[in-house]
Image (cartoon, rainbow, N blue to C red):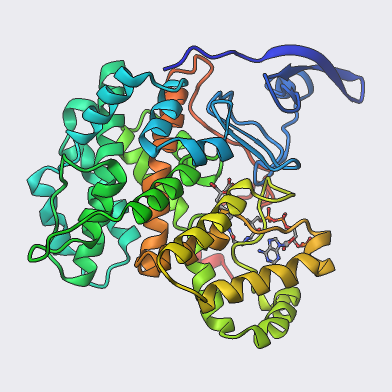
Length: 437
Ligand code: SDX
């Protein structure tokens, strides 16, 4: 892994409780606001801090991804997402996230070859699919198959061996496209297509997903470029819910495949990676732009529990830079595919316009996020809605495994163990059943 800077003390804060005072060191990184180090607060003041969804709590030091939610900035190892989406490839970004620097030609070639030569699955893994119903959600299949991988690759699960950690990273990045494509093939009752070593990473995924044995498959450069850019946009995103899940699972010493399976499970939720599938369902339910005002009214009615899917973010309180690139890619892909006026896109653009002018959303700083447009592109590229979140998981696997590796190598890393405010019954004695009311 890349040698990275560590935080430095840039000041201190004091917290006084009665006659006790705690001095909290302020730690500063290379970018972003300083954080108060509260690790000694229980010893000094006998209290914990309370931050139920960790929105104001740094769980680790990391040098992988930087987000500025107010400025709409997203950097992978210091490189702006806009530049990587324009000039890079997903495998080059994967190398950058894993190792911290853009590879030279020789390193990129070796990394690409290493990933390409690990795309096949152990033949016994194919039999997992026989146990699923044909209509199983592909995310259920991804969770199961990835979670079982440690049983098939026991030679790369010793987390204390750097070489085994690297091998498991290659295996995860290489095999997740095969697993994702095969989940779809199982859903549609078509034969599994084995990976091809003559294709690029994104070409290979599209081949395994779309190709059928009787038909010669010719990669489409437009779809390949769009797929690669979508993978880049979804590759990593700091300490989001699924990445934090991977880190917490990894902090116990669980093997990397089990940790990635935990991340897949966490990403599945509609508030997180499941939002892209939920956006398409929402657009289908709205149906026509004449129905937008009634839908917006429903969203504003808290009792409806209806959310404007694809809008809002825990960190971005301005635009999500990925959404802007996704919208641009949407126009490119639809245009290049000859799709003149896609009703879903027209509806999405009208919905975004109305929402961005509505005080309810403006006051709450709700803007389109990465999921708002991704579903429209994926649908135009021929993916069923159930495959949208698995494609997100495929891309985020490189972020998860990079964050997992950074966590394992972090000398400050200990088992994750949040505390609580207990609000249950105070101590009381057991009552025999014949004495209870
Ligand atoms: C991802 O963390 C990451 O980095 C995640 C991600 C990644 O790359 O890993 O970026 C990927 O998960 C993107 C988010 C995808 N989810 C959705 O599109 C689902 C819809 N969005 C919401 O569920 C919501 O915006 C969240 C979950 C994303 C954020 O939830 P928060 O932090 O609770 O939102 P908030 O604090 O900014 O909410 C402020 C107000 C609240 O109302 P009030 O109590 O102030 O009246 O805005 C409301 C919220 O109820 N609100 C919404 C809304 N999102 C927030 N109201 C309607 N529609 C929405 N989408």
